[in-house]
Image (cartoon, rainbow, N blue to C red):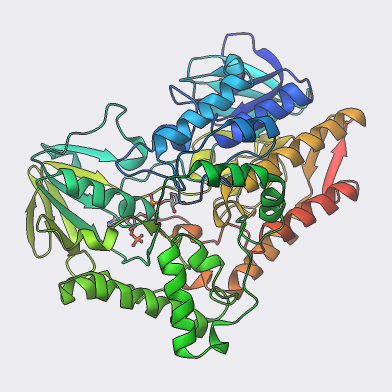
Length: 546
Ligand code: NA7
């Protein structure tokens, strides 16, 4: 028995008793609280490590942080009043506006009173005798609950790469996902930014506009399409509000959770000029529509994909004045969309600025951080500030940071040592009454998150209501159902472009992490139907007992 397992039982304090413990007060935790407390009437507590609510939108306060999905569908749909009263200012709201929205939701539904802030869950142990979870938090408290729901988020465990010398750096350094609340003053500073994922692509133009100099250290060039943010006019807002029922229906029945009409055309059935005209129109329009609304086979067929990839490369060559820099920025080693596609505001244009330098760390790898900057194999870069836009230990990092023990003391870390194993991304065999919102094996990060979050929260809420109505104490995925689902998720991942990149979808960004494709590729609508069918079929693949 590990030390940690023992401490959960031995903490001197009497546990608080609840029906439900939720971990995390972001988009998913807030709605889950509403659903189990206000709809089902269950005694619920939420533990949140942050000093405030909002999850992703609480922590990610880096310059340029904004949503890549349009505000009117990156929002809750469960309350018509909420939909109608909230006013989004623009297509792609910045982080402070999304955080204000979530704070409004919390106030409107009186959620804060059941959230314990600055309280980190350290361990959770399933007690087989009582069929309850015993949860230990970093304030020394214990809580017991029939149900434990993880709402820890897919992209919340920040990844700071282990580059030698960081301890001796005399300047300041920050990870974008742990950004200081009072901001960072870049004026007159030489800034180094490591990472060119969605975050780095949002941050670089804003930092470059403020800093004396910005050096961007790029490992993998990225395909990015302009966002083309714009204010929402009163007319557009009224139109959206009037159409909300249709918009929501559209997102739920779509592949990715976006209200775009999928094209029934292959990229290969048009002539070069016709196809280019489609890409050009979508490039001018901006946003994810370029991927989801152009041709149905961009993620299915490499030749089709290459037409979009080459169009984006041609745009990079057009925008970036220096041909060598343009070539370094043009991705060639993975298909478009096989890594999370970013959208941007003036990202490629930023490399035309006199105060911006691009360093290709594949050509000249980073050797170490020195007291005064960063050393690559080609030489030293003097820096006052280093910004790590280096992403997250995605999908499993935050959950595995908690010492979770199921039946027979089985550790989740041990169970997932060779990659996450779940049934529907919702439950794990050996861990009764533990639910994982947008867990690995569900569409999650491949979809518009609020759509997937709402579906999971509602499914879990209905499942708990069913158990209580049926007088059952526990629900647990069977090993056979889990095995079949893991195989299904892996088989689907082989079909399209996703297996052709070293992405965080497979854990490739974390040294030593087992490479397993984690999200479900089958799409939001298919997945929803599958979950609904499982529930309708007496929770097929789960064992209900007690
Ligand atoms: P990402 O997408 O994981 O991007 C991280 C970036 O940092 C990416 O360019 C990485 O290169 C780079 N990286 C990571 N480690 C290193 C080291 N050691 N050296 C050099 N470069 C490195 O994270 P983001 O925060 O941008 O986006 C995460 C998600 O948040 C995003 O997809 C949205 O869903 C919201 P690599 O590509 O691994 O070669």
